[in-house]
Structures are given as C-alpha cells and as structure tokens.
Image 1 (cartoon, rainbow, N blue to C red):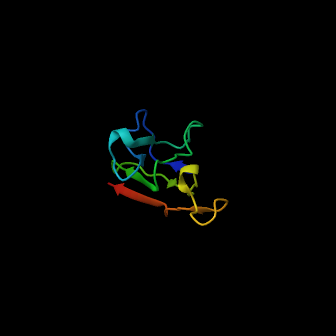
Image 2 (image 1 turned 60 degrees about the vertical axis):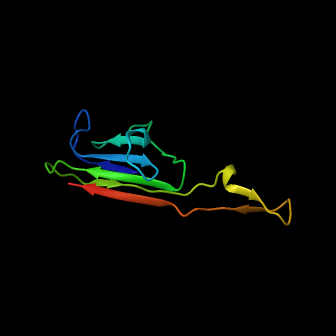
Amino acid sequence: MVRLAVETSSDCSKDHVDVFDGWTTDDGRQLARLCGTELPAATGPYLTASNLAIVSFISDETGADAGFRVEYQPQVHDSDLAESSTDSSMFACRRLAPVVVVVIQI
C-alpha cells in the first residue's frame, strides 16, 4: 500500500481496505485492515505465501476521499529455485505470475 485516503473511523468499520493472503477472504488469511489517511509504519510490505492476494475495498457509501493505491512486486524465494537436471551449477526458476484481485463493495 503506497497511498491511503479513505474515510476515517476508530475501528475501521466504515470505509476500509483489507489485504488477504491467497484466494480467500477468511479472517485467518487477513494481513491488514486499513482506513483513514495515514499508513502505520508497521504495515507492509505484505508478503503472501503464494502468488495470490486479494485487496478488498469496502465502503458504507457516506463520505468521500481520494482512495488508495497499491503496488505489487513478485519476489523470488529460495523455495522457488529448483536445480537443473542437466547441470548442477544451473538453476531453473519457477516464477508464478502475481495475481492481485481487487474487490470493491459499496
């Protein structure tokens, strides 16, 4: 999350942005719930266990602000590297295309 400007509420119960790890919005997969205009220093970058993430914007239809901006960048981890069968000094990289789903609910 690089910019955030949505309706402020003390518990983020009005407009808010949720970030989830994977292809589900289960509470156990939630990485963050953000609202207001300040990004807490402790937020992000959000790392997912796979190439999937959901960014969900929920609005209560009152108030208006500039919105939010998300940037994403795929990362290569040691577990994504597999030794080539033809040359032990060569490595083949399995890069999965990043998938970010943005859900807007009003």
